[in-house]
Length: 256
Image (cartoon, rainbow, N blue to C red):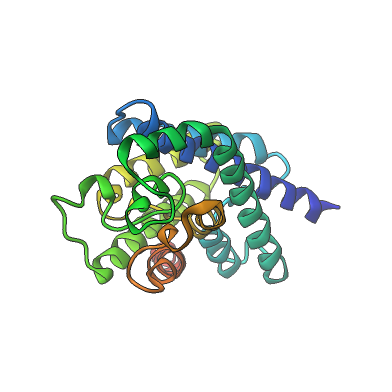
């Protein structure tokens, strides 16, 4: 029963995180010309809200990279990891599907106005509200982002996030009530730095779940970056590596 509660928390929390966060990107694309810091702030609030809602009955990882790091830190059991991953992915997909249902009519009007045919190669400009791309389509005229640079950006961003989580949760410092807010602000700060390069996925479930919804929602192959399998190397493998390096660094730091 406890595992079911934990999984429900992971699903619900990731659902909230993706609905609020991806919703802010959709808002910026379809309705209001939001600046990057506006989107980063909404993501911060979405992450904090998701943790506040679920931390009473779940570990509130909400991110496979965090779960993997916590497994190595022995704060989560190995046998729970696959179920956590599936719950997080399901929450992200449900949120993306609901978001697509809500905005689909307005999105269709936007595509007509912009001359975008969903499924064409150029339609990734509207798919950005679900999965990530590098360079960020809003910066593609001023930034050159190689496959390697994108991997480094996602890995470093996730490293910073997971290391911060370890630091904040290592000991009781009388700030337990604001830890979710601090984690949310950390995500927002990372987005400000990394998003121009890769849109700052930092979370394999948050990227892959909505990307699958976009694929089946009409975008097809346009829901994936142009470099073959780079969605795996950049947005799945790199965050996992970043999370593991954060655990190893934290362990060394605390031993010393």
